[in-house]
Length: 221
Image (cartoon, rainbow, N blue to C red):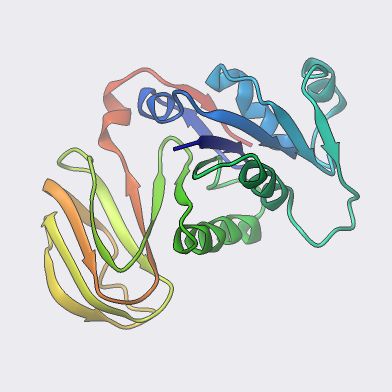
């Protein structure tokens, strides 16, 4: 698989887990997401966007990175432009770094829904801030490597049919979950998390517990 890291403008905690997830990845920065390159020890092969939130000092520090400049009045976010650049280069797996937090809640919501759309099209997506991870859930079964005690929620974007949670403090078996229900919020991994889904659109949001036991580097917008 060809893995690309897309550096977005949200929050970042450069945990050892995140650095492992990015090993071997090619990197594209979206506008102010370039701020994360130093904390991650990575050099993007492309810097794309309208640069309305990238300070001159940041541009000077990374003047050797190729730029694709877009007008401020456009019909795509800088993040979506960066994703399309990765796909045009053959990406089959995306890690959306800095996908959570930041100043724009609308952008954060778009990251969640765009990742769902990409996953449905066959592009594997992981959203992360280092502290928090998101993985779109498709019909079928998926296992996660989270340690016991990891907090997680299943965020539903529609009615969910046949939702099964095992390896969790509060397990579910072939459950119907109506859209807008809080039933699947604030659960805890116990014994190896596995999720099954018959139909619907959802995302698993988790806060890996290994963060608390290891040294990290912080960067927040």
